[in-house]
Image (cartoon, rainbow, N blue to C red; front, side, top):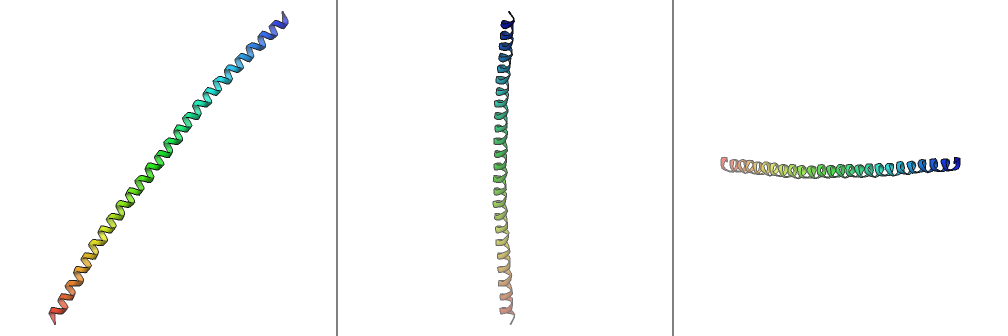
Length: 90
């Protein structure tokens, strides 16, 4: 009877240990999945920020180009007026 008790107790604890191992594996898999989703979300956020920065840079470049064009037109008009004034004031 003593041997049977030892064997059955050992089997009980082995089964409990196996159940705990399986439970820990499941928890680990869930944690890995959650971390992977979090990483993918962070990567997407970084890509969105980069894209937004590129769009802002392009918009700023367009505004600067437009402003430069306006200044060049203004400057050309001023030079033209000065030349006209010099020619006709003599």
